[in-house]
Image 1 (spheres, rainbow, N blue to C red):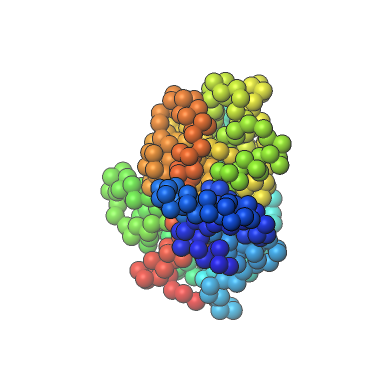
Image 2 (image 1 turned 60 degrees about the horizontal axis):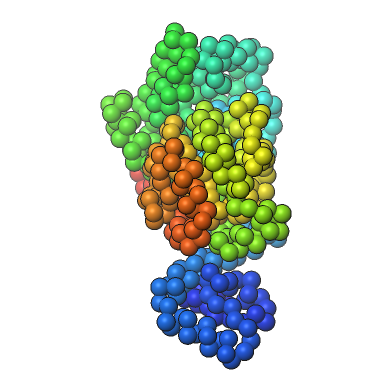
Length: 488
């Protein structure tokens, strides 16, 4: 406990190789581990006194390491559930969240946001998430979080397939805007759930056609991004008439969501400004940025990463790219493959449903396609990684993968566009450069352990300000203060 207290105070710790459990916390990056002799201990103390910059660096790393030692993590390792900060009273009316896709398991950024944000809300009020999905199911994921999924119909699937042929991309979301008549059971279930709710949240605008024109409780719009702007980018190669029709549907749905909402959750302040410019609508904007599940994204310092890779049988430096099969991620693959070709001695691990894309049917020998990993497996991969790649040039909202990289100690190598809406500065918390400069920048980072250590520690501090628990509590408190929602 003394060592942890010292580390939490930002002080490097001097210990001996025979100190037992302390050596699991202290490394040559967070302090000094000396042989159990007077001369060795004296040498460690001498270095501490004569190298103040090194002592300060190791002290900062020690604090980051100690912050990972929490009772919540002990509880998680034991397979238990920590108690919520405030338990909703029995019989409280739930908050209803409408989602246009399945959440079990969360397979991409939008699904992760819905799952984690409203799980955080469920610590303060019961939450019922109602999804359009491939099959009927209902499951409780926390004491007061229920996720119900309702199957689509053959008629709806045909309608969605028609849109996808014309737009040349997945279009189940836009199909909901003019195809809700094909989902009569879902519409009926939504109306039933609205009658029992204390608040309704539209996560994306695509389920709005299922809502009655007038509801007795407030509506909150959870804007993952400016949908119209995103679709303009994603549908660039679609049939012209289909593209214009689909954009008009999205524009109208997004406008209605803003007009009907008592409050709007936005992922960054720039999105609120864009909404006002695009639609001329002012609303109660509630900042609810994308976050990270810190309990399942433990930080690992650079020295410990090397040991973890050795245990995993990885001999070389490791760069990771995480992505779903989503157009911005697919475009980023070209940069990842270019880096792999330029740095044949580095291992590149790609994970997520983007691994199924035809671009990756042939890859260099130093590229590993891992597919969709379980949460625990992804955490280990990110802990082992030296660098997390984010060569994004397209998209909207903010990139959740950046916070995942930062939380686990993988240095964030990103385009400036890739960290939009997030407080990452080049050379301080991340390494930012144009996508064409990624191979050169990656080589620099691979060769400079001290630079990686500095960037990783600073980035972890940024990630700690974006915990889902804090974001959930803050946004729900803001809604309560504005009178949009009242705590049960």
